[in-house]
Length: 479
Image (cartoon, rainbow, N blue to C red; front, side, top):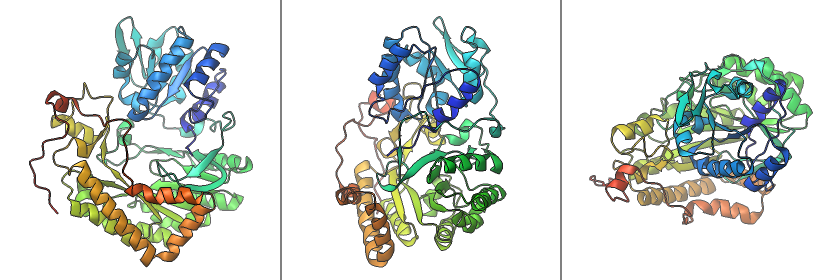
C-alpha cells in the first residue's frame, strides 16, 4: 500500500521531451532498494542522478541513498528536489558531500534547464550548488502559472501495481482496483499554523483547466484504472471548474471511482451532488479539532458548523466514505478539549477518522513561532521534526495526550457500534472484501496498543543544552 511517486512520474516525460532518456525507481518496491539502484547506476552509467523526497522524515534515507550512489558512480552529479529540499537547500549541501545540487521549487522547467547547463550551473534559476567550498544560491524561478503546457505523468515505466488504501498511514485497504494518483491543482491560499504548503508558492493556488484534467482522466480510464485519488492540497476551491470536470466524467461515461481532499469552508460544497453522480466515492476533510478555541489557535479559519454541514452534505449526496483528519496536543489544549474532539467526531457522520499528535516541521508558522520563543534553534535543528507535546511547555505531556486519545477512541468506537451499527457494519464489510480478519482486528486495536519506539524522538538543541528530556511545565493540567 503506497501512493505512486507522482513527482517523478510528472517530471519523467517532461525530461524526455527535451531529448533525454529516463529511468525511474520507487523504493517501495522490494527490488528497488538502495543496493539495487546502485547496481543499476554502475551498469547503466547515467549522466545525472536525481532524488526526490518530501519531508524531514525521509531525509536520513535520502542521505544513505546519495552516499551509496556516489560510491557506485563518484563522478556522476547528484541533484535532489522536493518540499524538504526546497526549504533546506543550503543546509543540505553543507550537510552532505554526496549531494551536488539542490533544486528549489517546481522541476518541470528547472530540471531540463539544469541538464543543458551542467557545465554552467550559474545559469539555472532556482538551483543551489557548490563552487569550490562556497555554496551558491541562484536567483529563484517564478512559479509556473500554465500547468496545461506539460505532458501527462508517466505511469507505465514503473513495474509496480499500487493498492488503494486510506490516506496517510492508516493501513486499511479500500479496493484492489487498478489505482493511481493524480494532481489537478497546486498550492493552498490558507495559513494553518502546522502546514508549510502555502509558503512554497506564497499562498497562491494554481490549477489545470478542466479540459486538460479530463484528457488525462480519459487516458487513465482507457488504460484500465478504476480508482483515482486526487492529491491536490485543496481540490474544492473553484465551483465552476469542479462542475465542468464532473460533467465531463459523466458525459464521457468514465468508469473509475475517485476521491479527493478539501476544506469544509469551501464554496464548492454545493458541488457534492454532481461529484457523487460523477463517481466520487471518497472525501477527506481536515477537521482538526472539536472546539472552536483550538481551531482558532491553529488558524484553521473554519467553524464547527461548517464542519457539520460539509460532512452531512457529503453523506446526504451519497458519497460512500468520508474521512476526518484530527490533530490533538495543540498549544493550551486541555484534556477535556481533546475528549471533546472525539465527542464531536462521534456526532459527525464520518465513516473513518484519524487522530494524530500535532507536529512541528521547518517551513511552517508553528516552527517559526517556536524559534522566536527560543524552543527550537533554527540553525541546529533544521533537519529535525518534533511532536509538539515533547517540546512545548504549554501543551499536555505526551503520556497525558495518549491517555486522552485512548479514552476518546473507546468513546468513539462505542458510539459507532451502539448508535450507528449499520454504518459500522458496512464499513467493516468493505474492509473485509480486501483484508484478512486478523489485519482488520489489528487495525481496530492499534489505537490502544502500546508502541515500542525504534527511534527516540528528537529533542531541540536548546533542551539538549539544558540537559532536559522534557519541557519544564509550570502549569497545572486542567481537566
